[in-house]
Length: 112
Image (cartoon, rainbow, N blue to C red; front, side, top):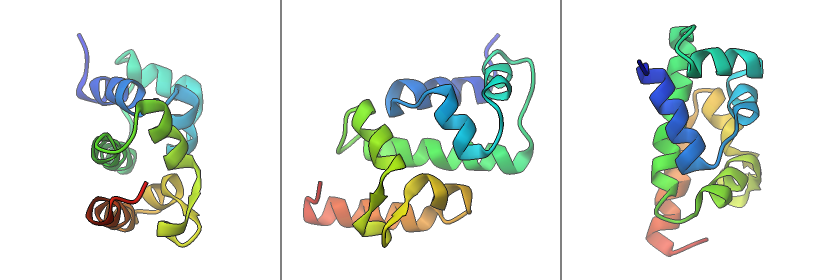
């Protein structure tokens, strides 16, 4: 039986082009830990669940602009709309609103 966290992780891999190592780096855990979450053998702590949930929301928003492999690169790259910061770092630092604002600016201006 698949857990809610496992389904979200599947979405991040399928829709965001993310690999377990990407997710592990973003939430600051080992790839083995992400694997256990994916298998339903463990559950992340609440703060980590929040980061994963925010990441999923950002990935969903980016689907309007990018294919999964491009989404992965966008999340990892320093971006001018984020003042040279990386989306993954902002999401981890509980600054997801800044990432979403950048996506809104992309949407309004057609910026890719």
